[in-house]
Length: 93
Image (cartoon, rainbow, N blue to C red; front, side, top):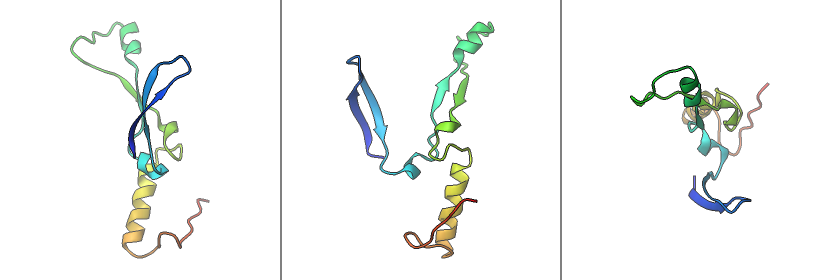
């Protein structure tokens, strides 16, 4: 990734966003969202620091929990000489 970039939202709020050079830079960095409101509504005491978070798998580059596995398979096949970057075309059935 290129790192954090500051942008202005429509309501003039400064937002910091990370911009990736390529989709594979995002694999393994699935966004998380806090779900502590659910705990509080259920009466769970969160003062000890307990947190509930959800992984937003649909925001992965290929919208899948299999992104990391797929990237690992491709990297291993490249290391073994089975495929060549820029020459081999992979098609998911």
